[in-house]
Image (cartoon, rainbow, N blue to C red; front, side, top):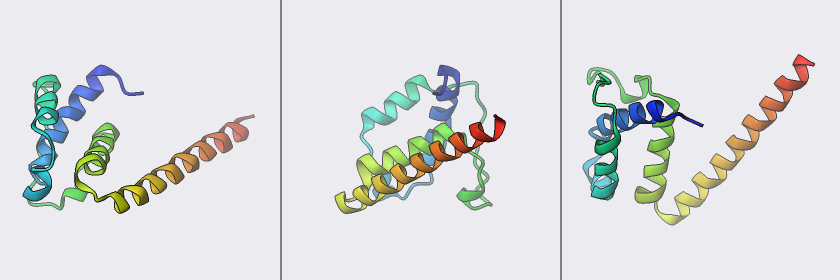
Length: 108
């Protein structure tokens, strides 16, 4: 689980990343959610996206990646796509647990 300082940095990053969301998607995210990120972001963390590079090339905290997925799941995706995303996330979680188990077994 991420600590408080890491989450504050993730809130800073998500505020910057959201500037690159399509306007129609940004408009679906409730203002209360954005205000929360603004209130609790790390105001000393200097994070900028290089607009000359694809957004995918920007290195983000894993917590920021999770926030992106969460925002899109909750506010942007239609229900059928949400179900598909849930299945993918569940499979990824199972895969991560399996890899963790396999690594533990290698250490023994």
